[in-house]
Length: 197
Image 1: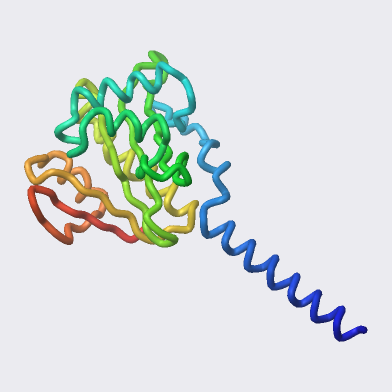
Image 2: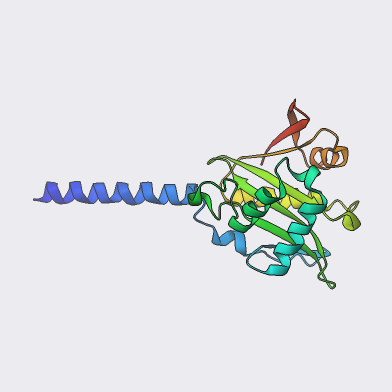
């Protein structure tokens, strides 16, 4: 009887341990993504986009204005990705897997830009979209977004960050290289970057 009890207890312990590892590895610590300490020295705040129509409209307008620089997809695809917070709009199980973060200027509450990140696997994350409004460029805000994404990747246990930009987007390339990204490929009009976070 005692042996049977020990076997069941060992099985339960293993199941709990494996379940815990899967939960942590898959990013169940999602609540971390919603809580951001405010840096009093920065002229902006960054927060996760919820259902606020103003935030969504600001992102969609910037997508419309900068569609060529941001993606090869059409506007409808972008809209669906944003509404579902998903990189794969054809797989409902992935809904909510791609958080968007927005930057607003302190004091004026003006929309400054946004970033969207996506977990590729347990160890790698990707910055899918990063855009700063033209009137706020030249302040190295893209670099601040990259640092913010690194922080999120680390919180989710990822070790590597990746991103892609167009070959002709030299200012973005300079910003990413300044933050430590290394180019690992150039193909079909795109530059591919990676970094260990």
